Image (cartoon, rainbow, N blue to C red; front, side, top):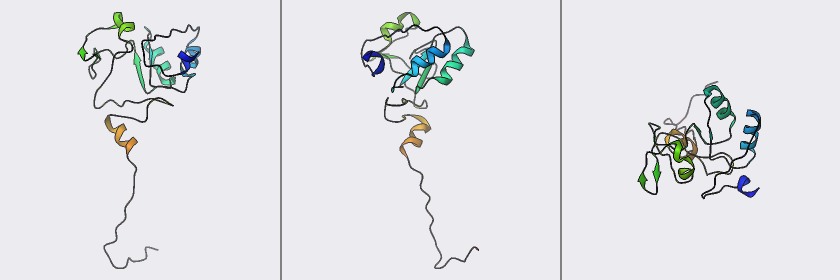
Length: 142
């Protein structure tokens, strides 16, 4: 199904039933994309188990880009909203989480690296060692 296997930027909410936690993770990871993922559950242990196995750059538990998260903000068409779970479907494709210290980016074919925080510095820089001699000749260290 194309809507499941390709990255869609539009008003699409795909719901796929599953029977087990393992099956849910397998379905979620069966794509080359991995920008974001989430878990809605009353069991925090389950949330951590699933999130740990999801191939996604940003993971949400019981929310999706909601401004009740202290470090982030929800923007819909430039207007700040305070909507929560009740408007999840309406806001699903129109929200953006942003905080300068929270790394953002996807896994696989989603995105092109990491933005924000030290993750961006690590992603966009290359380590180089530079050795400069200030003496005409160096003593043999051996």
